[in-house]
Image 1: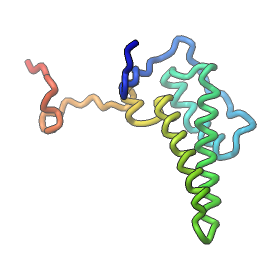
Image 2 (image 1 turned 45 degrees about the horizontal axis):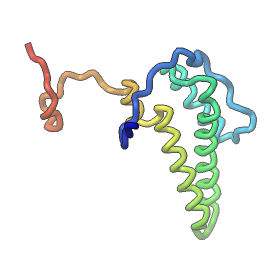
Image 3 (image 1 turned 90 degrees about the vertical axis):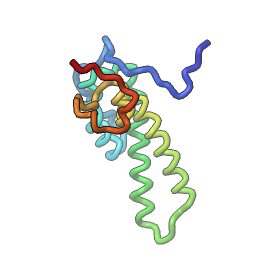
Length: 136
């Protein structure tokens, strides 16, 4: 068995991808529903979300909503609550992991080829030293 430690497979368009955004599930909080409405059009446009992925997207949105609710509540407290802060950190870790899973971060979008500028002006970039270019 081969392990790809640290290397994730590229996200590809799915033949069974949804073609229109569904409304957010009624059980989501208003913060989570707002996140659903924000990310669903992106996922639909990239053709990477299927019906089978909806529970994961719902989990992502719920985690975003939970982290926002905790932040809102903590702003009302005169003294920071360390237990709430720890819970918020766990929500945010979950958000980060699920966002990467569905191509909602810059790095994971690059795996799809979504936000990579097609720019030929990398001759001046010192970080492009090892990249081979064919010049005619």
